[in-house]
Image 1: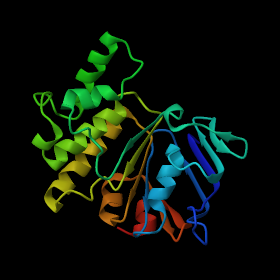
Image 2: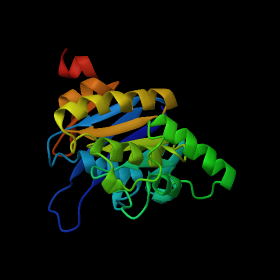
Image 3: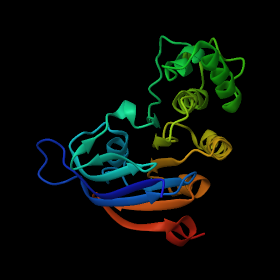
Length: 227
């Protein structure tokens, strides 16, 4: 298994009970997994724990055979080799497309940065938009910039939090297909959370259904959701 999560627990400060309760999930290399649940189910919290953005969790997280979390270990977010796209995309409004993507390439040499930038612009079909600011882009284009920025450093694991919730229905279908092509092309191991079964059907290899911090069931998309 490329990602192994066991007995994950988490409680927010001042909360009376755990938000995440004995969560477990495995992901194969190159697989696209969806965590499906209603609002308040804990699905986005799981993503934040995997990424290291929530520090007070217990359990075990291994990524590419490296321990990111256990009772003796907590690897900082920037050391986990994870790329993440947030629900609101979190682009820097004062930076152009090029600058937003380059931001993720700290530590790369000048030539390598330019080569990788060109690859990413090609991958997300944004050649010709390099000099635009986020407010000059459509919602779908903003999302593609966020994806390019997250994938540019070649992360071991790619996380997406409700990636389609800000898009209208027509664009949603189109962007889902575009993201699937991008992830298949790059072979990127990915986990995304959503409340929409159609997102799961369009994009995921397997699905983990959560409710109140528990895993209700998991498996093949058709087996869990039906055709």
